[in-house]
Amino acid sequence: MDLTSIVSEICDEADDFLAGVTRREEAKAGIAEWLTINQVQLPSAERKAIIEQAILILGNEGFFERSAGDET
Image 1: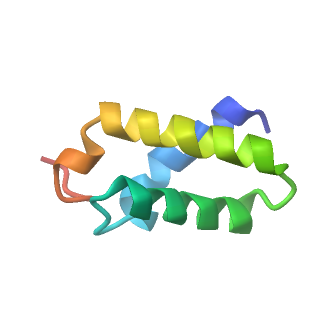
Image 2: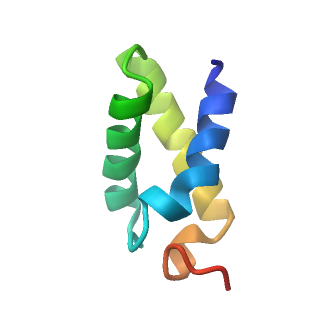
């Protein structure tokens, strides 16, 4: 699986596994945990890049400006 697909999967599932998270630092930890469970083979540098990209996308989508998991 390529990195873009992994980032997309993380962002698609963020409302579920980041439910209640409203701070970027908490989200980074949650994404790191998700990667540990779902993409154990990834090297550290790729994990970091994926986390940074996912946080950027979630921020652009307003994830941190609302209650996580809220569809409004």
